[in-house]
Image 1 (spheres, rainbow, N blue to C red):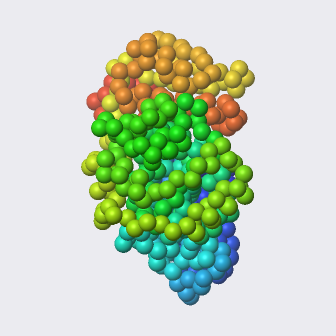
Image 2: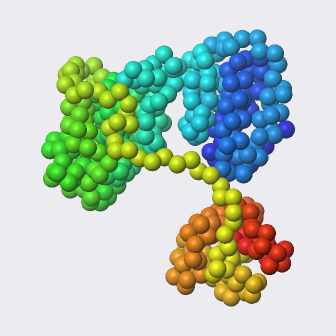
Length: 409
């Protein structure tokens, strides 16, 4: 039996639910699309850091065992559960590529088709930079930035159609703009950027976009004449700015949230002729930015005890407060911090010098956040053990219950 929907972790839920619904159909149990989705889910869930996601593996294995002999690679269903599951996996797990579905289906062809190329590469390598966006048709000429409006991207992807390459939010006038610019430059099909929705007060990202297009930047990469709070683009180059100003035309719909008006403007922009670009297109979108070291997250092998002690976190539903007990490593209760907000409790512990290791501070922050969510939702809270194995020498010096409680229980 599969876990109920409420038990599925948020990152895994979209793909898991596509798989679960597809597995209820015999045609999917004989289809290569579903087999590929299950194989991809098995890989992604097995490598996930979250234990809650790894706990889904037995269910995925059960689905794999329930598959029948593959009768076809893909039969082009209008709704392809396997293809859509792979799309969701690719959206949430780095190791999964949408090419795992060899043929695809109508439901995913507009967004994740292998036949669509961007700058000579398979579409699934675009956009190269993560962010809060939804990919439409990568061959479309229009992109839409909804500023701080959260609900618009999904609605616009559905309403605009094939002219829309991507729609997403941008709250900030620095890192937010940088990611938008780099993703647009990585796709030379895109020639229009519609700015709509509501700006974040103070940040005023839309104003920075307009001034970037109109005026460019100074030698310190600050957008000229922008009224934004800090429009400094440290992760772009002068070349990036010059290409953006040539490639992208802006449509100012700042403050507009009416879907019909935005859709009309998008279609009008897509019909307009565009100039030939004079700047060379990089063969690799990564060439547009300085080299950034990428690290694969790995759990530590050894648990290092914090010399300042350890914490026990106890959410109390009756009072709506979190009790955070601080113990010395010999087991003596030394401090009790009470509060309603995890971040305030953590700040107090740091201020009082009760944490001396960064990994311990990160662990405590995670547990306090979990406890706060448990109080708000009424769910059960259980404190997890910290990552890593306690060295045998230290474990023998502590009694068994304290050893398992250190950094968490």
